[in-house]
Amino acid sequence: MHKRQTFAQSLVRVLLLSAGSVSVVLGVVGIFLPILPTTPFLLLAAACYVRSSNKFYTWLVSHPVLSKYILAYLDGQGIPRKAKYYTLSVMWLTMSVSAFIVPLWQVSVLLLCIGLGVSAYIWRLPEPKL
Image (cartoon, rainbow, N blue to C red; front, side, top):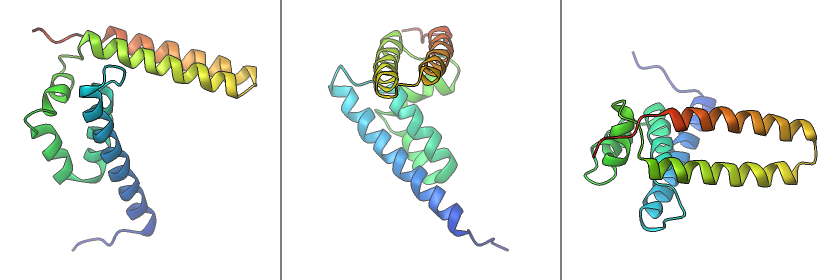
């Protein structure tokens, strides 16, 4: 017997599908624009799709072009160094802007701690062999 989805579950699914789709678009744009990172957006899309639509997730991880950006990470091979640089640059830029906009020192300290933790995680990821 198939359970009916509640309104909240349907809403979460739609939001995840939307976020995943926006991330795919940004990831594709990032292939052509060197300032926009590709891999993190496609990883975010995969994470959104795996929680909301098996059809879209399967499409993404089997796509002839886009899957190469995702599969190395999902297989435990890591992400390319260029993607690490872009990811860290964009992250620190946006966190700096956020810390500047919100004048509470507690927010700045929290952002710094989160940024350091995420930076350490990303930097320690392996890099795929060519």
